[in-house]
Image 1 (cartoon, rainbow, N blue to C red):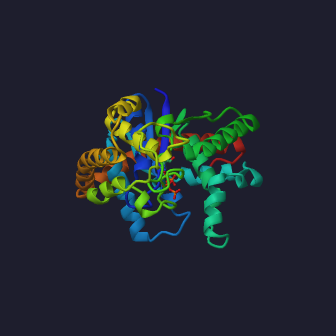
Image 2 (image 1 turned 90 degrees about the horizontal axis):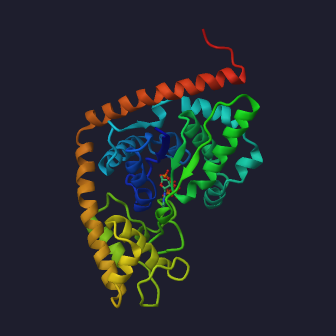
Length: 332
Ligand code: AQP
């Protein structure tokens, strides 16, 4: 079976709808057809300041949400990044293979550091994409299911894999991004030309899965649309309505043309109210399942321990090959 690898940050407490539709939903589907490795990336989380207790809680929150979303530890390997030390070890090697200018061209770093200011931006945030390169290459992943915002980082992964393979010997699988066009970018409900994001969105534009469903329903009802009245998918001219149609279509499995037909002659109010209801219906059992996993921390921790063991077996083999190829003396 081809292999996939992906990760999600534990920082925000709750996943948002963009994380779910852009990434996690694909993870669940891919565990059926692929040898799948999924992780909660706590090493990535500390590139910005974290409260230790919150980070610990959020890591378990993230794992519980992944299980609630449908990941099955019998069908995939679910683990916490810091449980597998090879991530940090391979990241160092990849750091030494990356040009400073090359790393400086990463647009996510440029955007985030511009917002934070140079003194508050860590070197860890700068090398974040290179840790991500190590995450992927350790598992020899063929594909990486992510949202559109990660495309440039996958491109860097491909470049570095090829560089290592050429400089030393064929070692790494060169991975492809796995980006589902329709849900590659879910937009902020208040600013539908910007991606929904835990750090950039206004609270009213960000739908967190673990928030009170009623509060999220309100956000759908007050989503920004346009002054036109026709319900039609047009990402350029009607980004707000198009975003709502994308979310509606993905949560219900109804195609967008079908939705356009269903809402012909109806107003935006009807679309928003219906979508709010659909979201609440979908998210309510998701929240209950998440709470159930959180109520049983022993089971949760044992799932993660088993996952880490499986992940380490693969990661250790790759790292040993890499250390050998670059000329490190083996430890006796
Ligand atoms: N709006 C989005 N639409 C589609 N996919 C998205 N992803 C994130 N936002 C959207 C995808 O979710 C996965 C996990 O993301 P992450 O938690 O690792 O980090 P992120 O990209 O940092 O999440 P945010 O909310 O965008 O946080 P900020 O803005 O603070 O960085 C990834 O596959 C991502 O593509």
